[in-house]
Length: 620
Image 1 (cartoon, rainbow, N blue to C red):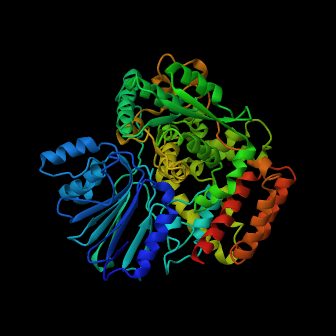
Image 2 (tube, helix red, strand yellow; image 1 turned 120 degrees about the vertical axis):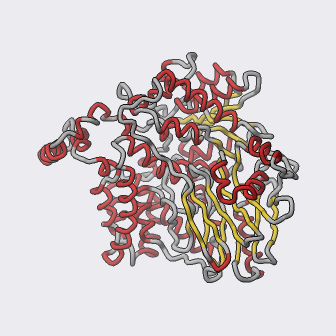
Image 3 (cartoon, rainbow, N blue to C red; image 1 turned 90 degrees about the vertical axis):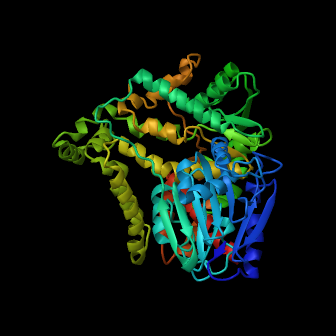
């Protein structure tokens, strides 16, 4: 926390104690606080000790104590940066990765962000300029929430929203625009949260806050794909070798640790490439791998993971659980996420992380492979029709046919694809319009403002032809706001650090510049990535389709979760009657009980009701 004008009151110290208690799960190995600038700045840190276990406690300062840092995450290229900084005359007091930040800041100021390879959310305080710099990593692997305090003279920040809730005078009014975004997407994109008084940094974004309450926010990086226009800078064989080489370097950096490093292994393309690369780099080192195993064989990927684990000789663990076991952590995990967040795969993700923590503090994952290398079905479902969709008159012709076409007939999906232009494929307008129907007339304007932000993003990405536009849209939105939020909260709940080699900026730059037909071929995505796998990988792993990681919500809402859903409908009716039409929510619930699958939307309403309750109880 920083107050630009006066010393912090005792209430700020009391808040810091509560915040550290609420975030203890993220750093159980130690905690420290320090006050700076004559009591106007307070930095606190909870540590998960991974690099320089004995000497890396934070906050950390430069040589004369004029620059201080607290950081959540890892700076992977810290050894290379440290070597250069020592050559420039800087003296280090620890062997931690975090210390490079204060010395690099001395050299480059905010431009230090250009040199970093890592996952991080950090705060750097420059006591000479009386400024603080907050920054979040490029892809958004680590979170950073902030709130204006002390009549906007001050700024408070934390890794999770729950730590900011005890603050005095934070505006807890519901952000209706954010709620509309949540109902449309299942998550709330930065910078919004469901509370008007709390914001979060975007991926690749930073804030400078200093004297006179001035606050400057800027993006220093965004994911951008490049339309090749048929120009091939690399042959396909050279592209395969380039991806293999850059991926190898990304894994090597992410293996830097003073504690054991394991890996998640689903038997899919991404995780198989991760563990096979680890084995290539460390042929004689023990490797521990973990896989989720389900009672439902349609969800069970364990046999594929077992094939890979046997070949690389890992100490393999299958974490087998049933619906009963997932339901046992249901309430606690939803509350842990603070914000409304409706990705049901958080439950098995947490269960695997909890099991992994018995053996490893650091885990490698395959997250990001789908976004960077065209792994999602919409990218390739109609790949043969991409050029046809852009022919003159196709949109109108498909639209006329759709009006006469029964949605149950074969070909309805293709016609729907052909009649949309590029931005409409990213922003399903009819579906978004249905979101407005949940809101009272007086609040539809606010809800529409939130949906318009989503539409604006879609139109920006639609400067690229589909599906490149969709790949960029997912890398800029779905990846940082849903996938990485899920992984960060689920892993850190068990004090496990997840590292993702696919989210390496050099590797991403290569993937984003490759021709589309390198990624999509023969009706499948990840065409190039499949060819990057070692020769020993069996065909049933190399060519298998992407498999879901989602529990059976549709059944749960008719059985185990029925009481919770009915309670949530009552809670929404009580708390949101002036904003929401509760009868619409009850109608969806009745449709589900009658046999229709409305579980995705029901889950969103359930977690929204929990978030409202938590926000109010934290303030009470």
